[in-house]
Each structure stands twice: as C-alpha cells, then as structure tokens.
Length: 86
Image (cartoon, rainbow, N blue to C red; front, side):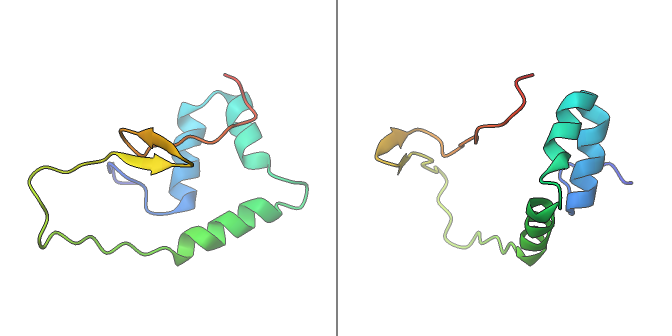
C-alpha cells in the first residue's frame, strides 16, 4: 500500500485503523450488529460518494463558522458518540 495522506476505500481505512487502534477499540468499531448490516450499508454508501472540488471563484480568506442545531460553531467538525471510551 502506498503511503498516502488520505484513504480511498473503506478497506484501506480499516487496515490503517487496525494498525493504530488498541485491539479492543478496533474490534468494537468493526463488530457492528450480528449480521453486519450497518457495516455493509456504510460500505455501500461510501462507494456512492463522489467528490468534485471547485476552486473557481474561491476567496483568499475562508470563513468556516456556521450554525449547527441552533448553536454557532467556529468550525464545522462534529464527532458522534462512540461506544468505546479509550
């Protein structure tokens, strides 16, 4: 695998996570439900994504502030709750 700053597939993301996370945290993240429905749905959804960056007309100074659920935030980075507290 070539060293890249970003992953291109879920499989590559899982490979990197397995190398970096404690075994208990990694196992919890990939275990999903007994049938693996959530995992397969997420992999399918990820494969449907396409990115088309546009730079025409970009301003020199970007403003990242926005409102999420009525709260002003300076940068739109949101982390969902997880089941592993490590």
